[in-house]
Length: 248
Image (cartoon, rainbow, N blue to C red; front, side, top):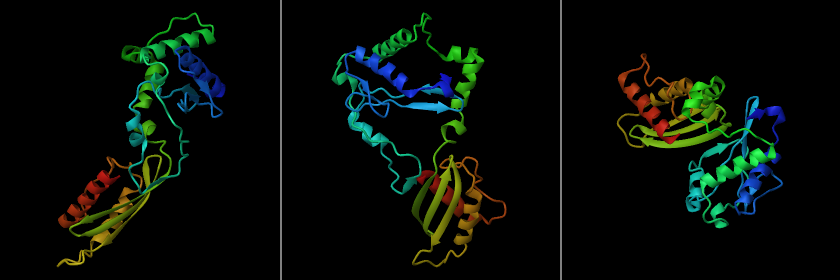
């Protein structure tokens, strides 16, 4: 971990690439500063005034499942974030069948010491160390917070539709930094019903107003009921909230 102003991505990528190459796979760094072996890449993350290099090393992953895990299953969700550049990937074991996680970690540690002429012993950080060193503990606790995990989510829109006994609902949601910035709920009454459900539109309007500012998907800071609503209206409101939590 280094100050953000002194962080340089390429030298770090080249360090890891040399470590991988020492184990057999012909690793290098492409023009995007990604570590590549037939498309394998590593990324980095900047945190406030601190920066560190992190990534996912494909050693022996189930590549046939990787695409499904990375695919957005919510067809009507449109993000305004920067899209990742798609690249072909391959496991390092294609070139080094016996390569292990431990061997990779040791190779990177060795290359780090050689690059920076280090004579210091390498220390593994475990839970006890995290609790004993205030600076590390502060960063560890920060990474567990909702603000860190969801509060930096790029802006996106999501369109939903659902059917209930009292009619059809369509929802158009906008969210930024993990919170709902706007939402509209439209109601279409059932074609055949003794009850026109004229009040559902008003329930939707009031709920949409209440939802602005709530945490997207979990809605755990959102009241499920209102004291100024009739029991029937309360039940419709609860059904809508339960539906939104599932669909979001």
